[in-house]
Image (cartoon, rainbow, N blue to C red; front, side, top):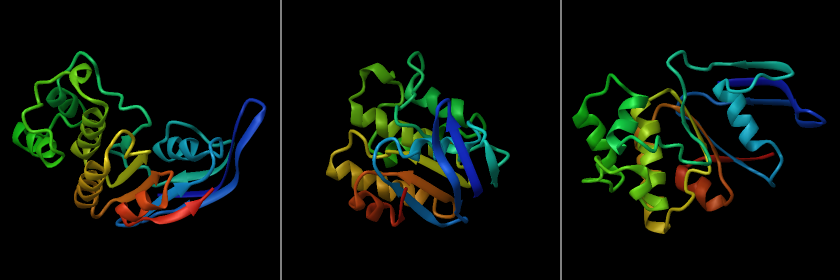
Length: 187
């Protein structure tokens, strides 16, 4: 994944100017900085959800990007298992159940998102990203709503599931970057 001399603006406000970043398979980067600096916008550019005003974004995998947004974005009328299958329709049920189990969600596969705590829903969103299994994973505040024990569990899960992927995460604390084994980039 590479962004080269990217500039991006919303009407009346330039968010990124001449920004470059390269992340190879197996590399992990953690973006830190004050609110409004363009961290989420950067992830959206890397996912192909936004188009830069100038510069180039290359390396978006043709099979899609494993992404966790700031909001969990689970489909309310679908069970957790159905949410995972939606992201990865070719994966078998036992594989999807293993992803849920690895995040402490065994027995919740038939639960609907509204019945989950915030931390459980966040872990389900992480499992859904892993179900796709893209070589590019983008995480916007992946540890939101997780206590210390579940942050560690989630970080270990992400490092295992995306061992060979290029990973970029927006985090607010250096400890979160350390959990992911990610180099900190301040923007």
